[in-house]
Structures are given as C-alpha cells and as structure tokens.
Image 1 (cartoon, rainbow, N blue to C red):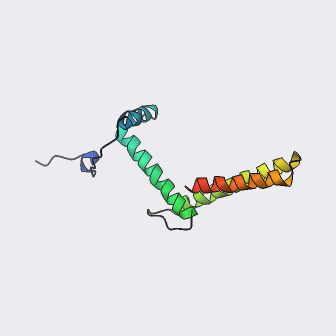
Image 2: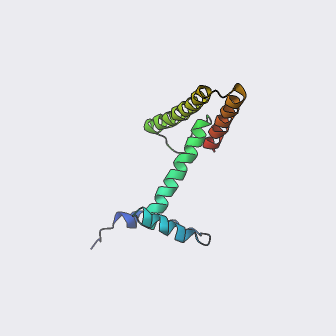
Image 3: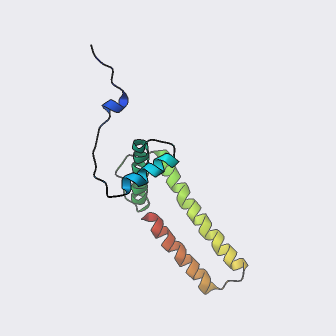
Length: 119
C-alpha cells in the first residue's frame, strides 16, 4: 500500500550549522510573525535573495534569480521614490533659505544614501 506523502515530506532538505544565539533569534522572529521557524527562515532567505538581485539590477547587472516584470516595476518605483524624497528635501531647504553650500551637502548625502541602498 502506497502512503500519500505530504508536500513537506517531498521538499528538499538542507542542514546548516548556526552560530550561538541565531536559532533563538529566529525563534523570536517566527513567534512575532506567527509562523514556524522553517517558514521564517524561508521568508528571510527569499527577502535577502530578492534584495541581492535588487542590488545587482540597480547596479546595471543581471540578477542571479528570475526577476519578474512586476519586480522590475517595483524596483523602478523604489528608485523614483528615492529621487522624489531627495527633490522634496532640496525644495524644503531652499524654502527655508538654506544656502547653496548646504544644499550641495544634502545632495551629496542623497548620493551616499543611494550608494548605501545599493549595498
């Protein structure tokens, strides 16, 4: 008689060694997000991989994983939002009489923020 297997029994397994304290940190996150530790780890890995691909795309490289048009659109919106916030800050500074030197510093800070976003 063939026993029916659950999807979790068919899923690929991968064992890892974790540094001290990481398991407890994952448990706390999982508990806060009301999911299993396995689901929490999967969620964190997917997010990290998506961000890594985002960094590659914003740097002009191709992502390692498949990236949908929806994701590409989301990336474009993120960049547009960053540019919009920078323009708002510059406008607010000029409305408050901030001189060109300080506005230049803010522009440079925006450039640094973009580089940090890309990492």
